[in-house]
Length: 569
Image (cartoon, rainbow, N blue to C red; front, side, top):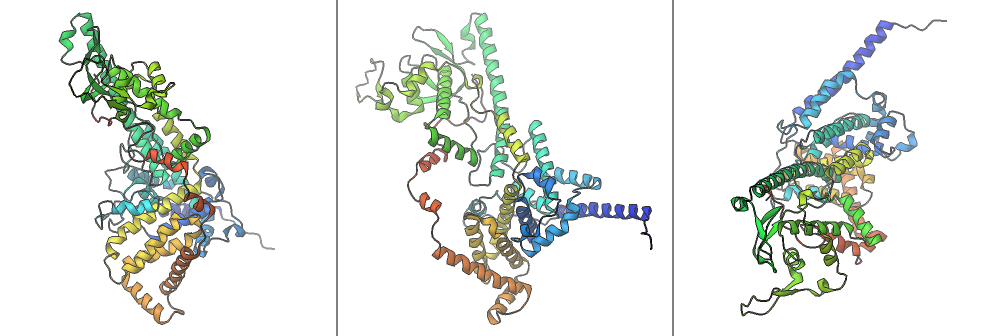
């Protein structure tokens, strides 16, 4: 019986070659991403890889579990819903998926992270035409898909992650991205390609909203530090003037209010003077205070808040904001009364007297609204407890550090499917936004393109769109072919009409697309609205509450705009 032959040197050589091949695989991917043409759309193969990752991610609780479990073989029955190409991708990737990245990949991965987080690198920059119908056209399609804006960090991240050959590598790279996000926060660096100081865009995906919160928290922390330092400087200047017993010398640089007794009291936390508004008892001008900024609410937090309000009837957060505004107003307007605050904060709740004689002998020249005069009115109770205190010295209504820490912790444990779904829709959105200016004006292809676009919007806005991943990938691949090889598409369309049987892969794809679009139209015509949709057409208390978060509305009334460059006095 022949003994098995084993050559240790041969084994080591083979292992080394496999390691070099894997390193070169990552290296080639990095080179390819760095060489992306600004006029090209994301490859259909990248979109398909994200679709594969979505399917694979459904079997794991979160990204960490996904990384730990995705290397093991999954039963064939779990793959029954996948397309043939998706199954092949998973099968071929499982062997190397067990290992993830090699040490030889480290330098390439570091360079990839650096490029992704370097706003000056021009990494994966795309030329996006946005003037088809309106200046906001390029973002409207992304909002239709609830995706990230076309030029955002999330879209670039989606293309990078989708370029990896296995779902496990995608998840491992995501873990590195979260580590870098945490480092940026600790070093007070803004995330590139994310607005620096905007409230979350509720029409974009949650991942983009969370990154917006991180950048906005950085900006708020910087403003709070500057405001606190400015207030300390004012207090030191006022204290120095008091020690010299000469307040008149500081009158030019500091703001004072005269009380009924004639005493000068320093105003603190002032933003600007309100035109044509004086305090009713002292006659001193009213100044708008710098107020605390409200919480940064992402879509998921708004949903939780709605549920809390509907379940408990509590408006505690609104009361805290109102009390904070009252304290800031008292600090900026010594000698003020509740009526002064109402006239500034909620003008509709104040009615001026109809006396046009010009007689100002009466200390009060108007009256509060009926609701303000009722016994036990919340505003009056809060006013009596409010102490004169500038916003920067108050207990914060929104803890930036706690909010960001919660986001980063969630991103570490985010469900894999949830992550890849947002990356998938964001990348698909970019492709359609870039293609539309070219194909919308093409008489031969514009109809097919808009059919593809409408189909993607209809599917992504419906429920359980991840069941249609194969169809979505096929539609995207067709759009890619329309852009890169339009003559092939036209030829296939013509051949499909003439001989619907047999033909090339492109022609078979068009047959399949015809079935998809036909089925979609039939579903629109015959589909019975679900119970949820039927309920959504009925009046709901949630709708009125949600409107509180639109635009610049607040729980009580509009507040003064946030100053960009503030000097506290």
